[in-house]
Length: 311
Image (cartoon, rainbow, N blue to C red):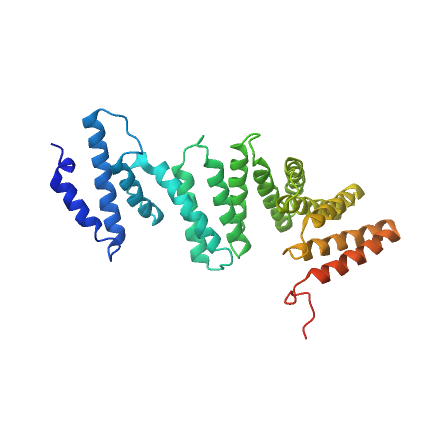
């Protein structure tokens, strides 16, 4: 009989499981995971059945080894890596949300490493690969925004581009278009490459056309497109870009509830582009509209907003 199938071996494994959680928690997970993986394989050979995730030993192995994957252990069963990566991604999303306001470089780097391992473990063609590439891109962009090197933004753009290429016309494509367009606009602001700005305008425009609902996500996409059009106007002086920016800021502002965070910034941006067009075309209506948008921005700002006067 294969040793891992013996009753005594299973009893020992159950006694070992009782140590969880303990001081050697990860080591126990590792040992239990491998034991149940070997046992699952032995059972599959013995019964001449196809391996399936409904097997108890496989479920235990995946559960135990997911903790090892999250900890960065690279001594794991190769056939299980895609499953472990999928499990780890669920935890990684939660951890990324917790890092939303963190400036700790070590934690951000650790999160980027985790998403990198998830992406490497999920094969090309996997239905969730684009989602995981987006997770990696998001944390790299976050690192850059919080003081990381320019290479972090470059890597984020590469991951967003790869994610977009992995989807076709499936629902949710607008998100991939927006992520890449927004990151390219950010790199234009950093380095001033015209091709980045042109690509950003094209991608954000396509994202806006693909986002048909009237919710806050469409407002986000429209705001990104308006910002890119304004940047191109300031570079080329093309009035249609300024007109387009105004139209999109107006539409985005109309979608924000009065008490929604972000309304102040959109109204402020709308006021600024209207003022730019007044300076260009001297239409008194633009100046009046700019003043009205500015007033609404002040009214929408919370009492602790940086632009509000201190008392």
